[in-house]
Image 1 (cartoon, rainbow, N blue to C red):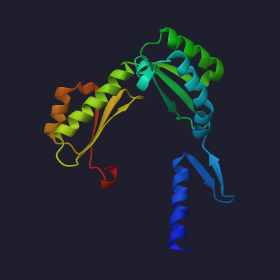
Image 2 (image 1 turned 90 degrees about the horizontal axis):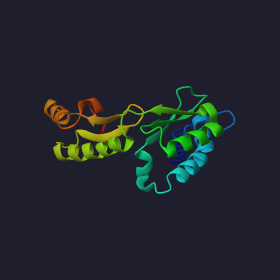
Image 3 (image 1 turned 180 degrees about the horizontal axis):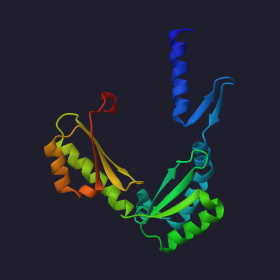
Image 4 (image 1 turned 135 degrees about the vertical axis):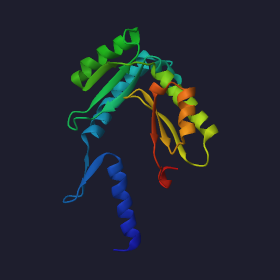
Length: 187
């Protein structure tokens, strides 16, 4: 086997596993993961329900004022979709809950959020801008919003002064600082 062919096979395997599936090496058949199959099944119905209840959902803002959605696969064979809702009793959330519970039963879960998802999403953007202003070379990777934990995750190698500045400028209980050495591939 030539070197080029080996590289192409490696890339193909990498792409397929990145899609959360597996290759059965004996039959060389792609096996879709339970989460991949679940997402393929539920996404069109979920999108239709969201579009019906939030027709003016430009940039996801209308939905983000009330809820955020994420997939959960703690039980690999029983994936589910989670609505983390800040405003559970609005007309839109009541209708979405009713429609999705009818269609998916226990595959959809509604939980109460501590904060408005849009607030956390916007704060992550604000923190990213701030991090860019204080970074000294490429030691800070950035900030992103973790919907499940309802925190802003900050990754990088930060000095004590940088961590203190973040905690003084933003609510420390909303920050999850991962102060670690980053690999060059992260940039």
